[in-house]
Length: 631
Image (cartoon, rainbow, N blue to C red; front, top):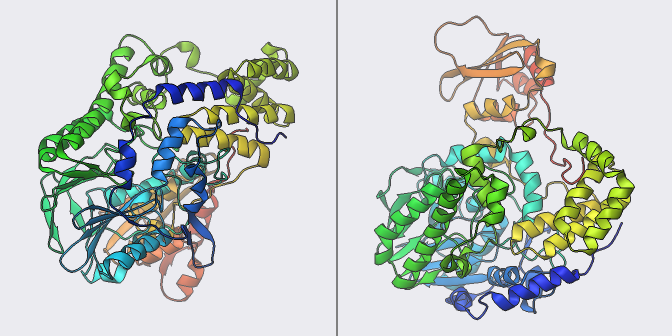
């Protein structure tokens, strides 16, 4: 297997062209990112209780140097900005912790303490950020927490800044948009295994930081790998204009569901003339369909909510900040910044629809579409995290689905079977690899990657093809302005050379699993039923939940686990279990020994408890180490 290569002549030339043609003379972002600096965490390393490093901003110190040929200069610029680390003053009484995780943690000083907005991914990084704040602003208690939306980098570190006891006692309200808990747990449980595995590629958490490896993900450097947690919100925001006062701080909320997250909100601090845009306006083109996988987002409504934010708050604001990147100051500048962001999502939506209504497919539109000069010349619209290419395809998917309308693409072979047939037509694996080497020398890396993928899927043991594919993906990564594309390409090369890295980060953490409702618990179990093996099984189980007084029936029939609250008389179940909701989680998702729980008297059972064992026998286990670049 080959080792890492230098940038090819064609990639180096393309990167040099970008360096000459992009507006690198505009350094306003650096002035904004440096403004208000108070202090950095020194050393910039966060460890867990066992001494394992879960975050290192020091690992990205190489970004202080000049951009090498192996990194797109625009991405290098963005990564330098994202790597700036420490405590920053946004405006009077508002501070941010930046560069200690993928996201920012914002701290708003109140009458008696401090309100924490978006406490990062991990307990360890959130605690380190709060300690840095307290070192320079005093040991203020946390008197409130706000989650801007339902992604884990905006709530996972909550137990690093407050406790469940403080929340239960009313000392620290937790505020989130309506629907937060439902979407937060669903995203991390239902398709959580697959998303987390692909997130290893997207964020490059296993890539060695450096000019040949990880330089950042565009939205931030990478994800911390500490312990994620969750405390369920105590206050739900359900309408725009709703105002809540926390520790003497008045906050007016704007609901933005269906934008960057299914459950999300912006909010305004009238006494500080400061506007928080959550993740709806950052210094990059965001994702409409994230590469790790998610529901397709709606650029049309995203654009409309940005218009609403401009009209409601811009003229009354002196600063706008978000849960990633750096703030923008001055009413005129921030209004233009928000307007550019608004126009970006609106333009991509409208022009994609215009083209698809003329018969163009997603891949065709993505190749042809160009941004207007005013958008293309703004650094904040560049595709460091999302990209025009995959966002346009996402818009097409949102409206038209996976099928492009060509019947030749309606019933294609699986990747392996298609690969075998392609190779036969090409004259075999050796001929395909020989021709791929010629295309590699010509710099046609996109085509080489496609051809070698056929060889690898038809013949997984072909080490020559895998070595050349690793070199090819590496070159594609070196040429990417988009941080997540770079990480995907370089992770593919890394795994071809070194084997699978699995899933470095944890999403389905105990706190997240514990937040599932009884309905969601059985939804999660239903997704694991091995349908064909369970075709002829018929099992009925009742779960009498003492906390709520409800009875929930789980019925396995025809390979489907149907479940519902029991109302009225039904035929007796095979077994009925009486237990608390916490014990339901422990028994069905937490790995607790149900037999022991029954023996201890925590769980009462009527009927035959072996029926549950039979049901469990039909469940399949997800694979957090599934193959991506090989079959």
